[in-house]
Length: 325
Ligand code: UT7
Image 1 (cartoon, helix red, strand yellow):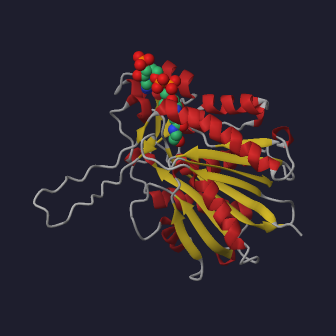
Image 2 (cartoon, helix red, strand yellow):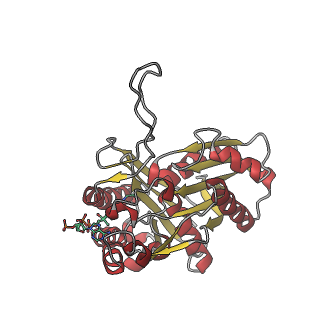
Image 3 (tube, protein in one colour):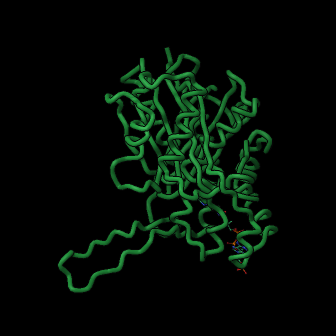
């Protein structure tokens, strides 16, 4: 029997504050027309007092509700994030406590930037192999407005805050296929933490810098189209499948033009690529579960359909995961 991932429920949460492109045009040399035509983004949500725990716990709560899962059924919590307020404790531990999960839960965070949710879901599947009776709560949660450089017009218009979550178990509905990669390097896309390596007794101390995202947009664009297209093809080939066999592609929402370029390269109609970047922006690790939740709640996703999740991001990392909904 081939046990694959079975997603039992999804949840999403974005903070209520919406920021339009016009509001960016008032603080930076940009315009609604430029942002829409180059990225597909019309607005995004920003936290205004909410913590990353607030976002993650709301999304997780909704996913558990949707799955009809009780706290005692959750054995694993993996949270993908790069913007938690604490280096420790982990966000996963705080969510477990907030949701009243059992003490014996295995809870930890994982950081693979925008690929984080994919890697977390794959990790959860591996861990569930040890605990077939349990469910995993997998969360992507980001408050990117904390690490956005609002003086850099080429990046600040891209990002948004939010959290998405799924409750997953193992089922015999079909195989799950996975592919991932990590290239390394800090030149193209990075966010220095602000921690320094200076001896604490040194006479000259570096001033801590607020973490800010640095990105070479054109390079990331090229990398994204190449790596996502190739990773999807490799993932499907493991199961003897072709891109045309898939009903829904739910990819990292970074730029609508990236989705168009991937669809073209795979020769798949763009309609099979779910896109919600217009009202969410790029929410990094939260973007795939937020999009999956929106697709699920729209009623368009039907049980038995074939789904590919695929993403890329800082690392540089990329990955794809195929499963039956
Ligand atoms: O999840 C994290 C991964 N990040 C991404 O996936 C980002 C991938 N890259 C992209 O989405 C695109 O590269 C961007 C949206 C960041 C930029 O779009 P682009 O079409 O690659 O623009 P560009 O960097 O080639 O810049 C074209 C022009 C430049 O002006 P000049 O040199 O031609 O005069 C930029 O200075 O557009 C200018 N520009 C802007 N103009 C108005 C850059 N940002 C803006 C802006 N408003 N916000």
